[in-house]
Length: 371
Ligand code: BGC
Image 1 (cartoon, protein in one colour):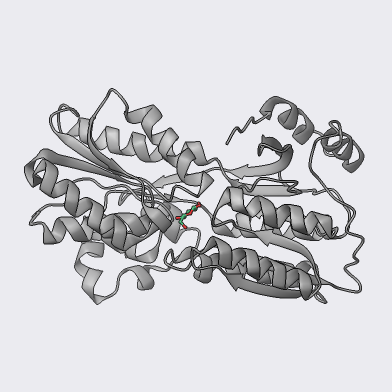
Image 2 (spheres, protein in one colour):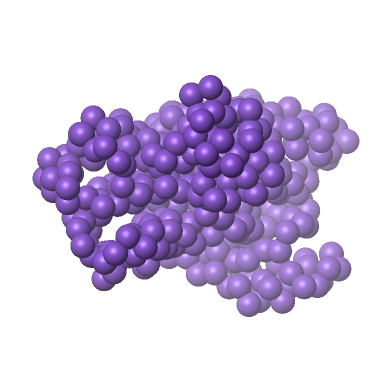
């Protein structure tokens, strides 16, 4: 998917705080996204459809759903949220969206299982004058607004962390790394992969590389088992895993494959299990993407779209989704290792020390200075 980010114009617009000027910025191009004149009012309230993609990754049910719902309730107390999780099934997501439209949803917040298939959902909704906010994953079609992280940067942060730690141990080409990427239907997975390759290519030996259908931790485990068989356990010095679920699968494969020390393994999402693996020394890093601002921006975008207003808030950029330039907010990912875990995850209140340092991890926490 071709994505052109017009940062300079957006940055200039972002510096101007007057709503009038901001709206001039966002309507300067006929093919731009933005409010689609939903015509709803916060006073009367309306139905909002929230569609999340899967439940094997813990973020969706633990953070995204409750945080989006809470912000929607705050911004529009009379609104009603219709929620569905697609369990990685693109056809299921399509029927969930159709059911929401039938039930009278006036705006959709869509985290697409399959970006291209989701274009049908977006077009269908638009045909009924229902705007769509693309959440975390960009969809094709006439999307009104998009909020996510800078996903190429996520891949670069992962790749750089892996390269740095491998370099600390000697020549980073002394043996192989294994790359376990995300789901081929998720546009973010392509960005993570491209970002990681932009850092790693030529600097390390990539012994084996896989895409992971459905982001499934089990499939990641199978792939890692295959890699160990093909390369030999002594030839693997690092693992690029695109998120914490796939990292968990890869680490489980290495544990049953007889590794006594797990080579540096990356991740993403700051899942509690991954944070505990980092404390214990089984996983090297994760990428912390603060879900609260992402969720709250999505809620504000949904209310703006349904009420026919421009989104006012964080600085926007334009991201091209193959159909049009979409008014977007891209947040910044942060690398988390044992060293800065306390100053990031704990400081932001994502998890308490008590949640991380359960009895199994108490000694590792003390050794890492986390108490
Ligand atoms: C999200 C990640 C998540 C992955 C699997 C990506 O689109 O950005 O945070 O780990 O999907 O659900």
